[in-house]
Length: 61
Image: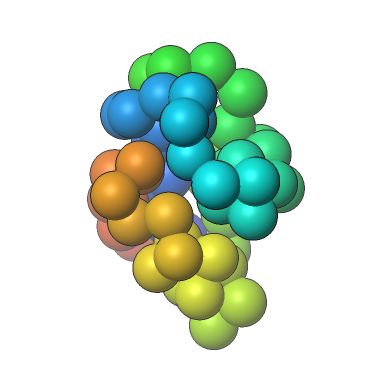
């Protein structure tokens, strides 16, 4: 199953509240923190909303 590694590369200070909640729901707290998720449409949609704040890498397991 494919997994994706999501890394917070830009601060959420000044971001709209919806984007702050999405970043927190992805498990990202501080700058350069990362979290590994299963690749599914729900996670991809969340990442697409905050694509200007995060970096995504695919991990083939």
